[in-house]
Image (tube, rainbow, N blue to C red; front, side, top):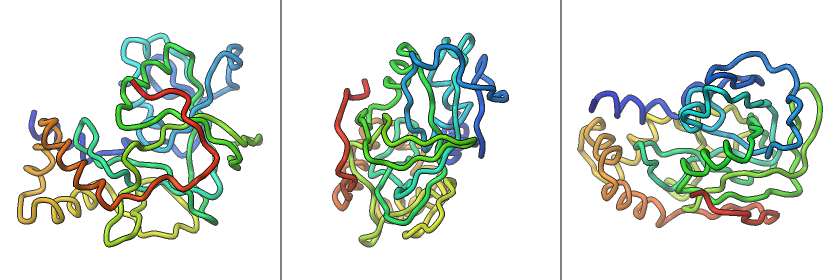
Amino acid sequence: MSAAAVAHALAYPFDIPSGSYMLAGGQPVALNGAGADADRRAAVLAFGANASPAALAAKLGDRAVSASVPVVAGELHGFDVVHSAHVSPYGSIPGALQHSPGAVASVHVVHLLSEELAAVHRSEPNYVFARLSGIDLRLEGGGRLDSLHAYLSRHGCLRLEGAHVGVAAIPVRERAWRALDQPAMLAAARDALAPGEPLDAFVLAQATDPEVAAARTAALRRDAAPFAWPEWEEVGGAE
């Protein structure tokens, strides 16, 4: 169990497809339109685990069996996906959206019914549910969005030596900052917070002990940068 917990933390963001798909019965299948109920669904930006079929199905729980969730790939201009200044409930240091002029981030848009959105909310205690405006998101297959919902980190964007750190698993053109994959990010956090501790022990502690995760989150927050895009408003916190 300990090895599984560490492996899960190291695997973030959990195999994100490069293109669009439909999450049907908990599995990714070809996307053929957004479906007849598209007007009842909230469009939510996904740039980390929420774009992963396996992670999204886990968040939906029992609903995943009967769900048909359209997940559309796109490119978000003027933003990067960097590491957030917090430890997730499963021990990773996950992603956060950050404004970065000139950057183009590969993202997805997940279209969720109200009960599906409520389930995802419950998995996002470290994020604020917000409405972004004035953006330029170009969708695969055509189409463009200038506003949509997104989860924004409550803790800000992590900085190492005064600089943001990109999530290496997320393709971003014209990235302004260095990027680390999850094992390297966790190793950097270990070096800063618990020098000399074996990485597996460091990760296991924060994946299984909420007090350890909270203490390390507090330490990571000290030099965090706020979300720099001005055009957003909170529309309901994640539960």
